[in-house]
Structures are given as structure tokens and as C-alpha cells.
Length: 371
Ligand SMILES: [Cu+2]
Image (cartoon, rainbow, N blue to C red; front, side):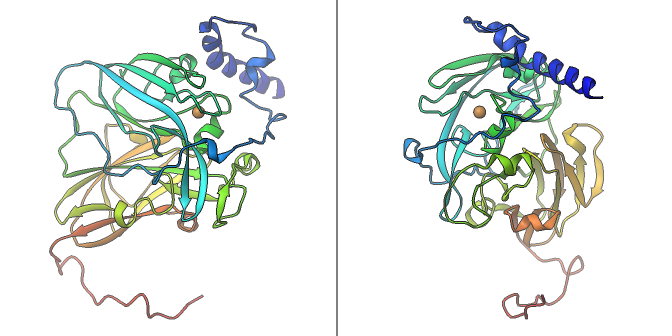
């Protein structure tokens, strides 16, 4: 058993780090030296503590990427060479009011940009790493077939850049994330996003498409502790996030960030889960998903689904029509996670249809505490 494990670890490590090292000009270590294995278990060197001077990094007003920030459906019927430029940038942003964090990002937001290409396209992805970054960064796109999903050729040192070229041969909605060094750390700190490889025939027409990504934050201070929060690697390896959020921070999809639709609209949600640890039980309170494309395999949808699983490092695509005005709360239905930040609002305006839904709304502010 133990031997099997070791063999597997060596195999995985060699598969992923091998070509990256081989491609570097200064190759000091053999592919099989232990130096190349520091990314994977058994965790004896795990207890690293990062010294961070927040003053070295620029502050962003809002770390979250808007759920509306989805490129329009592709109209073209032929394949193309698509150039994508991403920048690994480390910034200081707020997890919640007066709780700041040293986020690692693609293009200064969490999640990073929503990438949209067509099945069969050739993608040339340039990844630049900002000069002041504390770490090397890279990218593993689950849409890529090849070592490390691209990571093997995109480990970029601060101030440098690298290019990955790949064919988007399989339609689907895929997670991308940084996997340089300790991949889990880079994901937990915010380096993830989604790439849609649109099927040749395109997707059906809808009125709104939204981009939602669940992620976890492992802070030294407990949930709600104010001030600058350092990353806690022990909490991460124990799979105990302090925050579980949609789009980078608490409240990202509320008020100014809420999703908006009108009665009768067809809505499509692209939902990803960066993890690192938790599986999301994605649900919209008061709605039924007309169609769910489980695990974002863009064929044979399930119909009429209440809650759907989004694995760590996976995604789902779901569609529904909104029929009645009001606020619909997006949650991970492991509901204690609401208090850790995992909720947002879909606000629907329009005419009430009382044959569909009727009653007298209670006043939320007046009820007695029922605990
Ligand atoms: Cu990184």
C-alpha cells in the first residue's frame, strides 16, 4: 500500500514537473531528484510561514469580479487562433469590511477573467508575472490536454512571462488555476477562474449569463477578526477555511454586486468551485433549475433539479427561467457556509403572478428570536 502510494506520488510528480524542468535552459537537477518533488506530500516541509509586507503590494478597492463580467456568446462559425493575456498579480484586498488579505490573482480580481473560446480554437496564452510578486506563478487549465494542463510550461518567475499554446479540443466549462509550487496555496489565495470552450453549435440563447465561483480563505484570525489577515497553512491542510465565498469576498454578489433579471427571463449560471477542500451543494432558494449540465459536461442535461454538486476543481452550468419577482438567494446548501460568506442575491423584477405564488409576506425585522 505504502509502496503503491510512493510510486504514484513519484509518477504524478514526474508527469507534472518533468517537462517544465526539461524545458528550462538551466537544468541543474535530474528529473528524478527529490528537489522536484517538493510540491507533493507527505507534508514534512509543509509548515512554511510567509513573511509578507502588505505595503509592498497595491491595494484594490474591490477584489471581486462582477458576476456580469462574461464575454458575449461567440458568433463565429469557424475556428480561430485566440490570444489571451493574463497577468499574475498579488494585491491587498478586503475579504470583508476592514478584513484585508494578501490575495494572489489573475488580473487583479477573484475569480480571474472568464475566458471564452470556441471548440477547435488554438489558444495562445501569455502569462506575465508582476515584478513585485512574492512567488512564481503559472496556470493549469482543465480545458488543456497536456502535462500539468499547461502548468509544465508556464511556471513564471516574478517580472517574467511565458506562453502556452493549446488546442481547445473539447467543449466544456473548465476551471483554471495557478499550480506553481504548492498549488493548493495558490488556489486558496485566489488564483482561479473559468474558461468556457463553447461547443461548435454554440449554446442556446438566454437573456443573462452570470459568472459565479466559490472559493475558500484560510486566515490566521478567526471568522470576523478585523485587520490584516495572514494565510494559515495549517488550517488549509486541515481543510478548515474561515471564509467560504462567492467571487472572492463576502457580499460580492449582494447589493451593487447582485445578479439582476426580469420576470420571464432565461438565466444561465456558470458556476465554478475553486475549493481547495469543500464540495459545493449549489442551490438557489426559491428556484428550480430547469436544466443542469452536471459537472459542466455540456451534453445531456438533467432537468428540474433543486441542488447540484460542484466538486472542488470543477464546474457546472445551469439554466432556468425566472417567473416571479423578488430576491432569490444563491447558496451552498451546506448552509452554515452562509455565515462564512457563501451567498449572493439574484434580484428579479416584474409582474407578480398570484396563481404561481401568493401570501402575505412577514416583516423580517419584527419576528422574535427563535433560537
Ligand atoms: Cu500562483
